[in-house]
Image (tube, rainbow, N blue to C red; front, side, top):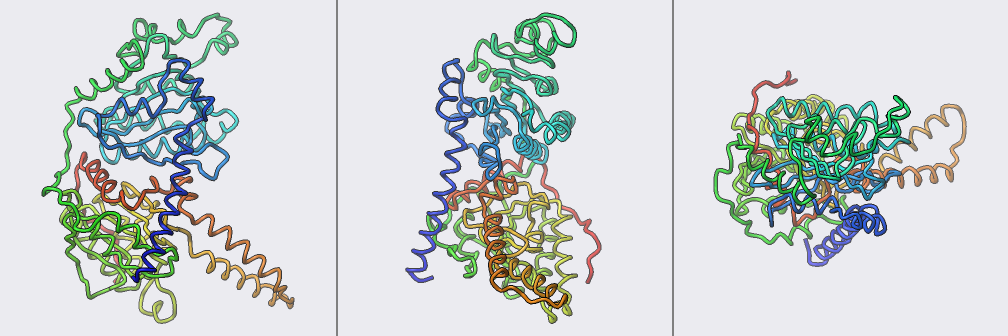
Length: 523
């Protein structure tokens, strides 16, 4: 790239990063200054402060789905904070209600974000810690929360059955269905005069039974510690509860089951700031993914596999923070038959050697046209998707550019359950590009009109195309997709190596084992 092109790419990326950081700040602000002040007046810590005190000092925290619910009718962040943090040297999944946002009530996006955190804990064998203070379900949206919400409690029992510890630190209300969070956790901590856990509050009890009671006698921490036995630990205040939580984790005798790093971590030979200048502002302009790879892998060493074959897909082996990794990266956007066959073989080899895989997305999909249909693009693309679907080594996906069509599937998109999926601010994803999709709809509409013997209204057609193109462009942007939880977060490109290292370390809590059992490959 020329100097002006580098400057343009850097300016474009920095602008997109600034836009995303504004959304991060909005989520971190919780319910706003007034709600935060009211919460502090009650002598309570904020959700993020609780997490900060719980994790080891100066340890990294990988926040997950930070702008969930963006683009919806609900507050950005979905009234819950989730992430992976280190407690007493143990990587744990953390889920903290934010009571400054609508009392910490659970809306449909809160549920989806919490379920994703549970999934990450289960798949990667990470202890799960809930920091509970919630008013229960957001009643106006109960039709979207109640029935699927039962999965939260199912997940807790499945984690426990799998030998993965679950903890609940109850900082306030945990009522109605929410009472089952501490009830189904392996370890429960309650706070004197602050924790309230009951299936039905005093008004409901009086209405149902005529019994008169108060919060403390019905579900206070002292009652649960001394009478019901629901509280395993009785804390004097929030900081004491956090101290107890840390001691519980310290006593878990937790051991990782993965192979661990195979070598010492070596910093790349190129500065991380270079990652700002690689992806052009216009994704139609190609870029070399090797420029990304050599800036995130150890010592910038990348052993490429089949470099002369299927050149639109770059594959090879590297290490990130000492962990071995196989990398598949789109080099020129379009996937042909050769690329699909190359990817299939590479995925099989990674499974043979028990090596996790990293997918770097920048694809417009599989090639179309008579020549390619006759050459078997469908069966070859199917081979690649078959391999991705049935591979059992951990997958991580990072969308750095476009991720369109079936290419998104072949590169292990969200539906293919990668252990983690992150996006750069430059990413886009949709069934196809906005202009192409609008053009296809226009062609279909024109053909239908002409088949009826009508005349195409060019002005109306142009207006329709513009409207559809604008809609698809908006819906393919990373913030929109992240808001829908189609990724685990949008990251600054300069943080890519750190984020990937944290993911690989988290994955290492469980075994890493490949398979030779794939579906039938159409040759």
